[in-house]
Length: 249
Image 1 (tube, helix red, strand yellow):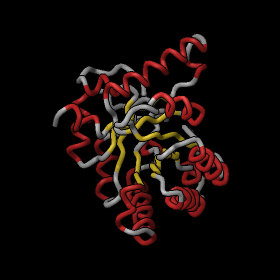
Image 2 (cartoon, helix red, strand yellow):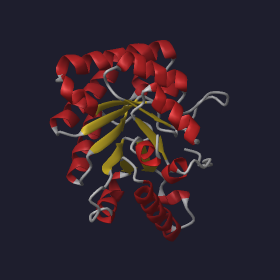
Image 3 (cartoon, rainbow, N blue to C red):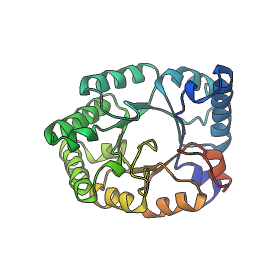
Image 4 (cartoon, helix red, strand yellow):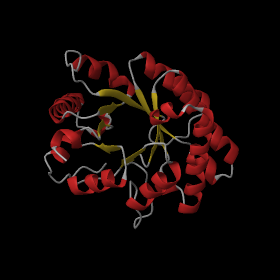
C-alpha cells in the first residue's frame, strides 16, 4: 500500500478547543497547521467542529482533489436530546458538512433506557440519509461491554439493512470512539482490535471507522487489513510519513 492509498483511509481531525491553547493566536496557528498538513497528506476527510466548517471549506476551495468536509455532533458526551442532535445535523449541513460523526447516547444504555437509546440513533441515521449525507455513529465502545456491544451493533445493522437500499449502506458508518472517553485507568479509551472486530463481524455490510489511540502507521495498517474503511487521527501527516504520534487523541 503506497502513501496515497493509505491516506485515502484517513479522517484528519482537529477537535481541540481554544481553551486548550494559551490564547486565540496559538489556537488559530495550530488550526492552520492542521489544514496545511491535511492537504499535504491528501486525506480522505477533514473533521472539525461546526464553527470551523466555513474556514475549512474556504481553505480547500481551489483544490480539485479536496477532502470530504465532516464535523462532529454532540461531541464528546452524546447526552443531548435527540431533537438537539437532529437540529445540529441540519445546521452542519447548511454550513457545508458532507459527513457527521454523531456520538450515541450510551448513557441511556447505562440507565436501562434501551428503546430511547436506539430511537436516538435511528432518528439520526434517518435524517442524515434523507439529506443524502454520510453518518458515522460513534458508539464509544469503551463505555459498552462486549456482549452488549454485539447486540447494539447487530440491531443497528439490521435496522439499516431492512430500511435502506444496499447501495446506500456505505454511507452509514459504525465508529468505535471519540478518543475523549475517560475509562478506568487500566482500560483502553479508544479503538482496540477486539472492539473493531465486533463492529466488523456484527455490523457488516455497514462500514467501520476506528479512532482513538491509533498512533503508528503499523496500528493503522492492521485496522485496514481487518477491513476498517476509515481511520480517525489528529496527526494524519505523521501517520502517512510513518512517524510515531504523541498526541493524546
